[in-house]
Image (cartoon, rainbow, N blue to C red; front, side):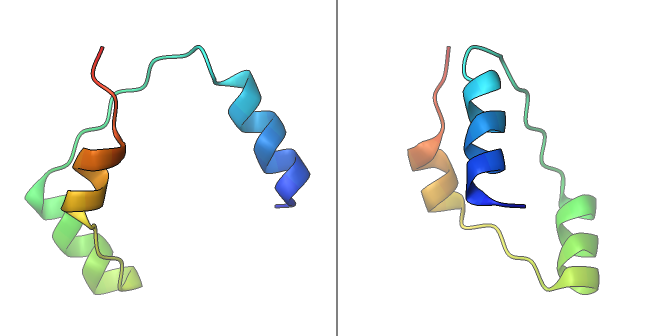
Length: 50
């Protein structure tokens, strides 16, 4: 996805609310399948609580 399209999507979602739910099973399986890791310190720092 191009940077321009990405920015347009983010702009459209600017005023929307999002719920993020993390559970051990999905974190474990995403790591096993894709090698993804979540940096929880960065996650906590970057999120906004309404």
